[in-house]
Length: 296
Image (cartoon, rainbow, N blue to C red; front, side, top):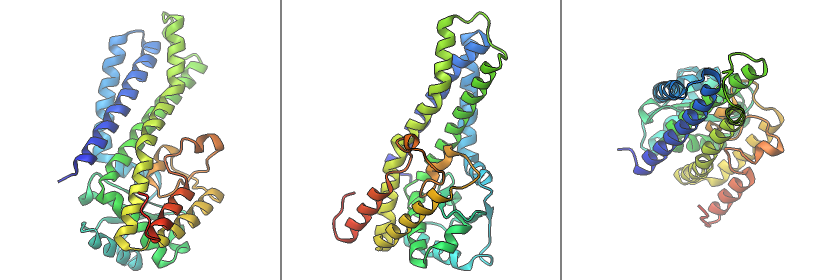
Protein backbone atom coordinates (compact mmCIF):
# COMPACT_ATOMS: atom_id res chain seq x y z
CA UNK A 1 0.00 0.00 0.00
CA UNK A 2 1.40 3.39 -0.99
CA UNK A 3 2.11 5.69 2.01
CA UNK A 4 -0.38 8.55 2.50
CA UNK A 5 2.45 11.10 2.47
CA UNK A 6 3.51 9.92 -0.97
CA UNK A 7 -0.05 10.18 -2.26
CA UNK A 8 -0.36 13.73 -0.94
CA UNK A 9 2.96 14.76 -2.51
CA UNK A 10 1.88 13.29 -5.82
CA UNK A 11 -1.51 15.02 -5.70
CA UNK A 12 0.08 18.38 -4.84
CA UNK A 13 2.56 17.99 -7.68
CA UNK A 14 -0.10 17.09 -10.23
CA UNK A 15 -2.38 19.90 -9.04
CA UNK A 16 0.26 22.62 -8.88
CA UNK A 17 2.03 21.85 -12.15
CA UNK A 18 -1.27 21.26 -13.93
CA UNK A 19 -2.55 24.60 -12.65
CA UNK A 20 0.59 26.37 -13.89
CA UNK A 21 0.21 24.70 -17.28
CA UNK A 22 -3.50 25.51 -17.64
CA UNK A 23 -3.40 29.09 -16.30
CA UNK A 24 -0.38 30.29 -18.22
CA UNK A 25 -1.29 28.17 -21.21
CA UNK A 26 -4.75 29.70 -21.38
CA UNK A 27 -3.35 33.22 -21.27
CA UNK A 28 -0.81 32.45 -23.97
CA UNK A 29 -3.47 30.60 -25.96
CA UNK A 30 -5.81 33.60 -25.86
CA UNK A 31 -2.96 35.76 -27.08
CA UNK A 32 -2.71 33.55 -30.18
CA UNK A 33 -6.30 32.29 -30.68
CA UNK A 34 -8.37 35.20 -29.37
CA UNK A 35 -10.89 33.04 -27.47
CA UNK A 36 -10.68 32.32 -23.73
CA UNK A 37 -12.95 29.27 -23.82
CA UNK A 38 -11.06 27.68 -26.70
CA UNK A 39 -7.76 28.30 -24.95
CA UNK A 40 -8.99 26.93 -21.62
CA UNK A 41 -10.48 23.77 -23.14
CA UNK A 42 -7.40 23.20 -25.29
CA UNK A 43 -5.01 23.41 -22.37
CA UNK A 44 -7.27 21.34 -20.12
CA UNK A 45 -7.18 18.57 -22.73
CA UNK A 46 -3.42 18.97 -23.12
CA UNK A 47 -2.96 18.86 -19.34
CA UNK A 48 -4.96 15.62 -19.05
CA UNK A 49 -2.93 14.12 -21.89
CA UNK A 50 0.40 15.17 -20.41
CA UNK A 51 -0.56 13.84 -16.97
CA UNK A 52 -1.55 10.50 -18.49
CA UNK A 53 1.66 10.31 -20.50
CA UNK A 54 3.66 11.32 -17.42
CA UNK A 55 2.14 8.55 -15.34
CA UNK A 56 2.59 5.73 -17.81
CA UNK A 57 5.55 6.83 -19.93
CA UNK A 58 7.66 9.35 -17.99
CA UNK A 59 10.23 6.70 -17.09
CA UNK A 60 10.72 5.72 -20.74
CA UNK A 61 10.92 9.35 -21.78
CA UNK A 62 13.58 10.09 -19.16
CA UNK A 63 15.61 7.01 -20.08
CA UNK A 64 15.36 7.93 -23.77
CA UNK A 65 16.45 11.54 -23.17
CA UNK A 66 19.61 10.31 -21.41
CA UNK A 67 20.25 7.53 -23.94
CA UNK A 68 20.07 4.94 -21.17
CA UNK A 69 20.23 1.31 -22.26
CA UNK A 70 18.82 -1.59 -20.28
CA UNK A 71 21.51 -4.15 -19.52
CA UNK A 72 21.62 -7.76 -18.38
CA UNK A 73 23.39 -9.22 -15.38
CA UNK A 74 25.99 -10.78 -17.67
CA UNK A 75 26.99 -7.29 -18.87
CA UNK A 76 27.54 -5.83 -15.37
CA UNK A 77 27.55 -8.59 -12.74
CA UNK A 78 29.03 -6.45 -9.93
CA UNK A 79 26.48 -3.66 -10.44
CA UNK A 80 23.63 -6.19 -10.47
CA UNK A 81 24.98 -7.80 -7.32
CA UNK A 82 24.97 -4.52 -5.42
CA UNK A 83 21.52 -3.48 -6.71
CA UNK A 84 20.08 -6.87 -5.75
CA UNK A 85 21.73 -6.77 -2.32
CA UNK A 86 20.43 -3.27 -1.52
CA UNK A 87 16.95 -4.05 -2.89
CA UNK A 88 16.68 -7.13 -0.70
CA UNK A 89 17.77 -5.11 2.34
CA UNK A 90 15.01 -2.61 1.54
CA UNK A 91 12.52 -5.45 0.99
CA UNK A 92 11.83 -4.36 -2.58
CA UNK A 93 11.67 -6.27 -5.86
CA UNK A 94 14.77 -6.19 -8.03
CA UNK A 95 14.53 -3.12 -10.31
CA UNK A 96 15.69 -3.06 -13.89
CA UNK A 97 19.19 -1.70 -14.43
CA UNK A 98 20.32 0.73 -17.12
CA UNK A 99 23.59 2.37 -18.14
CA UNK A 100 23.87 5.97 -19.35
CA UNK A 101 26.72 6.27 -21.89
CA UNK A 102 28.68 9.16 -20.40
CA UNK A 103 31.81 9.46 -18.29
CA UNK A 104 30.11 12.09 -16.11
CA UNK A 105 29.53 10.14 -12.86
CA UNK A 106 25.92 10.15 -11.70
CA UNK A 107 22.87 7.97 -11.06
CA UNK A 108 19.08 8.19 -10.90
CA UNK A 109 15.98 6.05 -10.43
CA UNK A 110 12.71 6.27 -12.31
CA UNK A 111 9.43 4.38 -12.80
CA UNK A 112 5.87 4.70 -11.55
CA UNK A 113 6.19 2.22 -8.65
CA UNK A 114 8.63 -0.33 -7.17
CA UNK A 115 7.43 -3.05 -9.56
CA UNK A 116 8.30 -0.87 -12.55
CA UNK A 117 11.43 0.79 -11.18
CA UNK A 118 14.64 1.36 -13.10
CA UNK A 119 17.98 2.26 -11.54
CA UNK A 120 20.31 3.97 -14.01
CA UNK A 121 24.02 4.56 -13.52
CA UNK A 122 26.37 6.42 -15.83
CA UNK A 123 29.44 4.62 -17.07
CA UNK A 124 31.52 7.22 -15.27
CA UNK A 125 30.17 6.43 -11.80
CA UNK A 126 31.08 2.77 -12.23
CA UNK A 127 34.63 3.77 -13.05
CA UNK A 128 35.07 6.36 -10.28
CA UNK A 129 33.56 5.10 -7.03
CA UNK A 130 34.73 2.43 -4.65
CA UNK A 131 32.34 -0.48 -4.05
CA UNK A 132 31.21 1.00 -0.71
CA UNK A 133 30.63 4.42 -2.26
CA UNK A 134 28.67 2.90 -5.13
CA UNK A 135 26.62 0.89 -2.65
CA UNK A 136 25.84 4.14 -0.81
CA UNK A 137 24.69 5.82 -4.02
CA UNK A 138 22.52 2.86 -4.98
CA UNK A 139 21.02 2.76 -1.47
CA UNK A 140 20.07 6.42 -1.99
CA UNK A 141 18.37 5.56 -5.29
CA UNK A 142 16.64 2.48 -3.89
CA UNK A 143 15.39 4.70 -1.05
CA UNK A 144 13.76 6.95 -3.66
CA UNK A 145 12.02 3.82 -4.95
CA UNK A 146 10.93 2.75 -1.47
CA UNK A 147 9.76 6.25 -0.55
CA UNK A 148 7.69 6.36 -3.78
CA UNK A 149 9.63 9.42 -4.97
CA UNK A 150 10.42 8.06 -8.41
CA UNK A 151 7.00 8.75 -9.94
CA UNK A 152 6.91 12.21 -8.36
CA UNK A 153 10.31 13.10 -9.81
CA UNK A 154 9.60 11.63 -13.23
CA UNK A 155 6.23 13.37 -13.50
CA UNK A 156 7.76 16.66 -12.37
CA UNK A 157 10.45 16.40 -15.03
CA UNK A 158 7.93 15.63 -17.78
CA UNK A 159 5.39 18.34 -16.95
CA UNK A 160 8.02 20.99 -16.17
CA UNK A 161 9.68 20.18 -19.48
CA UNK A 162 6.34 20.59 -21.28
CA UNK A 163 5.77 23.96 -19.60
CA UNK A 164 9.24 25.17 -20.55
CA UNK A 165 8.78 23.98 -24.12
CA UNK A 166 5.38 25.69 -24.35
CA UNK A 167 6.82 28.98 -23.11
CA UNK A 168 9.82 28.80 -25.46
CA UNK A 169 7.67 28.08 -28.51
CA UNK A 170 5.30 30.94 -27.63
CA UNK A 171 8.21 33.32 -27.10
CA UNK A 172 9.82 32.50 -30.43
CA UNK A 173 6.48 32.81 -32.20
CA UNK A 174 6.00 36.23 -30.62
CA UNK A 175 9.48 37.39 -31.61
CA UNK A 176 8.92 36.42 -35.23
CA UNK A 177 5.31 37.68 -35.29
CA UNK A 178 3.62 34.36 -36.05
CA UNK A 179 -0.04 33.70 -35.29
CA UNK A 180 -0.72 36.48 -32.80
CA UNK A 181 -4.33 37.45 -32.13
CA UNK A 182 -4.50 40.95 -33.63
CA UNK A 183 -7.50 41.81 -31.46
CA UNK A 184 -5.70 41.08 -28.21
CA UNK A 185 -5.57 44.14 -25.99
CA UNK A 186 -2.38 45.62 -24.68
CA UNK A 187 -3.02 44.18 -21.22
CA UNK A 188 -3.48 40.68 -22.63
CA UNK A 189 -0.29 40.97 -24.64
CA UNK A 190 1.67 42.05 -21.58
CA UNK A 191 0.10 39.28 -19.49
CA UNK A 192 0.94 36.68 -22.15
CA UNK A 193 4.55 37.82 -22.35
CA UNK A 194 4.84 37.77 -18.56
CA UNK A 195 3.36 34.25 -18.62
CA UNK A 196 5.94 33.11 -21.18
CA UNK A 197 8.67 34.25 -18.80
CA UNK A 198 7.14 33.18 -15.49
CA UNK A 199 5.62 29.80 -16.44
CA UNK A 200 8.97 27.92 -16.50
CA UNK A 201 10.03 29.67 -13.29
CA UNK A 202 6.77 28.72 -11.56
CA UNK A 203 7.19 25.10 -12.69
CA UNK A 204 10.75 25.09 -11.39
CA UNK A 205 9.65 26.46 -8.00
CA UNK A 206 7.02 23.72 -7.67
CA UNK A 207 9.75 21.14 -8.28
CA UNK A 208 12.02 22.91 -5.81
CA UNK A 209 9.37 22.89 -3.09
CA UNK A 210 9.35 19.09 -3.10
CA UNK A 211 12.77 18.01 -4.38
CA UNK A 212 15.13 19.21 -1.65
CA UNK A 213 13.33 17.46 1.21
CA UNK A 214 13.21 14.26 -0.86
CA UNK A 215 16.97 14.32 -1.38
CA UNK A 216 17.65 14.72 2.33
CA UNK A 217 15.20 11.90 3.06
CA UNK A 218 16.83 9.57 0.51
CA UNK A 219 20.29 10.37 1.91
CA UNK A 220 19.04 9.48 5.39
CA UNK A 221 17.15 6.36 4.35
CA UNK A 222 20.05 5.07 2.26
CA UNK A 223 22.61 5.72 4.98
CA UNK A 224 20.47 4.06 7.65
CA UNK A 225 19.75 1.11 5.40
CA UNK A 226 23.46 0.32 4.98
CA UNK A 227 24.76 1.79 8.22
CA UNK A 228 27.49 3.57 6.23
CA UNK A 229 26.70 7.30 6.02
CA UNK A 230 30.34 8.23 5.40
CA UNK A 231 30.48 6.11 2.24
CA UNK A 232 27.60 8.12 0.76
CA UNK A 233 29.16 11.38 1.98
CA UNK A 234 32.42 10.51 0.23
CA UNK A 235 30.56 9.59 -2.96
CA UNK A 236 28.58 12.85 -2.94
CA UNK A 237 31.76 14.90 -2.63
CA UNK A 238 33.38 13.12 -5.59
CA UNK A 239 30.25 13.33 -7.73
CA UNK A 240 29.63 17.02 -7.05
CA UNK A 241 33.21 18.00 -7.88
CA UNK A 242 33.32 16.02 -11.12
CA UNK A 243 29.85 17.06 -12.32
CA UNK A 244 30.76 20.72 -11.87
CA UNK A 245 33.90 20.25 -13.96
CA UNK A 246 32.41 17.92 -16.55
CA UNK A 247 28.61 18.34 -16.74
CA UNK A 248 26.58 15.93 -18.81
CA UNK A 249 26.26 16.97 -22.44
CA UNK A 250 22.73 15.75 -23.21
CA UNK A 251 19.34 15.53 -21.55
CA UNK A 252 17.35 18.44 -20.13
CA UNK A 253 17.73 20.55 -16.96
CA UNK A 254 14.01 19.95 -16.26
CA UNK A 255 14.93 16.40 -15.21
CA UNK A 256 18.03 17.31 -13.19
CA UNK A 257 16.13 16.59 -9.96
CA UNK A 258 16.13 12.89 -10.80
CA UNK A 259 19.90 12.60 -10.36
CA UNK A 260 21.71 12.16 -7.05
CA UNK A 261 23.65 15.37 -7.82
CA UNK A 262 22.87 18.04 -10.41
CA UNK A 263 24.42 16.85 -13.70
CA UNK A 264 24.37 20.31 -15.28
CA UNK A 265 26.66 23.25 -14.62
CA UNK A 266 24.72 25.84 -12.64
CA UNK A 267 25.31 29.58 -12.60
CA UNK A 268 25.18 31.47 -9.30
CA UNK A 269 21.59 32.54 -10.04
CA UNK A 270 20.26 29.15 -11.10
CA UNK A 271 21.99 27.45 -8.17
CA UNK A 272 19.63 29.41 -5.90
CA UNK A 273 16.77 27.48 -7.51
CA UNK A 274 18.51 24.12 -7.61
CA UNK A 275 16.36 21.05 -7.04
CA UNK A 276 19.18 19.67 -4.89
CA UNK A 277 20.14 20.86 -1.40
CA UNK A 278 23.65 22.35 -1.02
CA UNK A 279 26.07 19.46 -1.22
CA UNK A 280 28.04 20.55 1.86
CA UNK A 281 24.86 20.46 3.96
CA UNK A 282 24.11 16.96 2.72
CA UNK A 283 27.64 15.83 3.53
CA UNK A 284 27.57 17.51 6.96
CA UNK A 285 24.30 15.80 7.86
CA UNK A 286 25.72 12.43 6.86
CA UNK A 287 28.88 13.05 8.89
CA UNK A 288 26.77 14.05 11.89
CA UNK A 289 24.70 10.89 11.44
CA UNK A 290 27.90 8.81 11.48
CA UNK A 291 28.79 10.51 14.79
CA UNK A 292 25.44 9.68 16.32
CA UNK A 293 23.83 13.08 15.74
CA UNK A 294 20.58 12.84 13.81
CA UNK A 295 19.68 16.20 12.17
CA UNK A 296 17.14 14.72 9.82
